[in-house]
Image 1: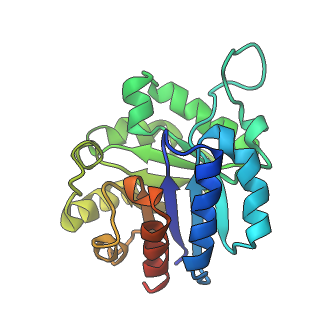
Image 2: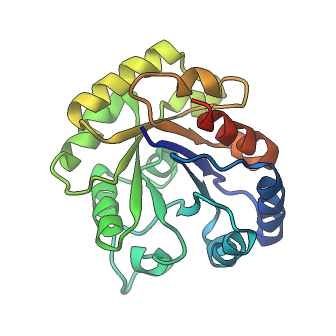
Length: 230
């Protein structure tokens, strides 16, 4: 089974910070067949890092956008369309709880973003919450995108930095898998180098999505290397 380790930097790191992070990461990361790594910096860093990652020769390491517009190119001031991200990133995170909560994104907004991503060859990482998973997933059951990754991301671990127990995550994965069988499912919620192995060992889990621990190259590289051992 292919493994995914996705780092979400959120609203952190300028271009210089990001380049230094990748320089450190490149010295610590051990590529492993079957493990795909994606890092989601801010939009302003994508173009520069797309070049820098190639210069570093990092294998199985891609960039992800943290979001895209639910609309195509056009009269949408401030929006970043999927077509603009294509060629800079391979993945895009959609439906993160912070986008739903602070930017009032609706289920339909997220559905539109998934379709925009698919239309322009980006691999969507769809974030869902336990309490709303059914309503968040139901509109996408018929989407023709084998590459879509579902990120099971309970809100409390993101807010309070306390991870959900592996047992409870296992139950959540089972529920998601019933609605979307044969799709890759990752867990996001206070993953650290100290607890990552417990989650990577869960049956049916294809990987992890990491927030705070991805801001330190050493921690993120450690988790990537752990994924290669499972």
